[in-house]
Image 1 (cartoon, rainbow, N blue to C red):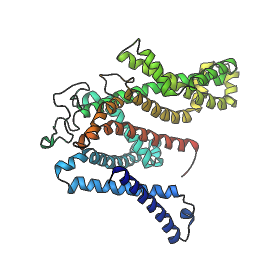
Image 2 (cartoon, helix red, strand yellow):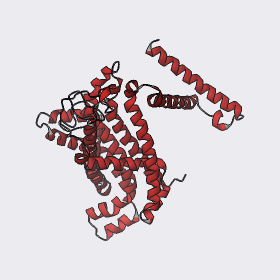
Image 3 (cartoon, helix red, strand yellow):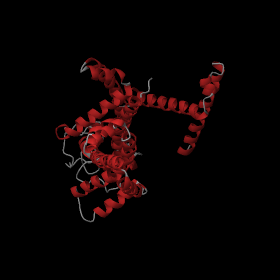
Length: 398
């Protein structure tokens, strides 16, 4: 049976299971509103989630207890991901308990109000930050160090083609994947954070300036931002970086990418800062500050900024995710962070050739998912924290 036919049969079975779930729920509960108003897409989602969970559990049980070691090693990354997820969940729970017991009264109250998802997100962000800062001490090898052992199988078992010195294996030119993942946190996350900071400094200052001065300053800046936002961000970045590559190379091109991405993303920050600032500048305390003779810098940074912190912090998290993903996309296309720096987007590109070995070496065919998983995990973690911050700043209650 072909793969396409198997996929279609599985899809039809899941759809039938979703319909049966909704129908059974309506009959058993006496047509309760939860099942009566349930859309088929929702029921299909429940069935699909259950099917994926069953598949994951069965695959894990096979890899751990049923299959021989040589065959089970092809699920090395999958088993590692399951262990990592369980470990992170337990650590997030313990981290929240620790925060409730240790710290100031304000921090303990914050942890008492924090859901487990936000605790998970904060913990992941702290761990990424730790790896980014101490990458040079944590990585077992250099990010550009090349060894003679290329395409080493993950797992570290010499009998299966692994090497204890390279627990996640090596890429096609002999670089240690674990070391490059750790250095990728320093380069990808660090550069994305610096880019976002520059974007907020530029866009936020100009947005508050436009909201405060209005008139021709507001009109000029707003129309310039409209022109920049009319061009798709990724295409605009590719165009500008391609032009910049004619003058600068290597590290200089990375710096140019940071400045270009900061400029492009500052337009989004400008829009938010201007909209928030427009609502603040009409307040009585702003008029009182003007009557006292306070200068523009005082009004912007001492009066407007403190009252715009909540939406700006939430936007910072979202904007960081967009910048982070865009930089990874540019690196995947070959115009982002330049070698010899390790970058997750470049790692996905470099290791994509491993997919061709799925037929006879499944344990290395999923190597590109390591860097992609690191990108996805941080994105989900930041969004968990941003959702919690938006929930708190909106004043909503559970």
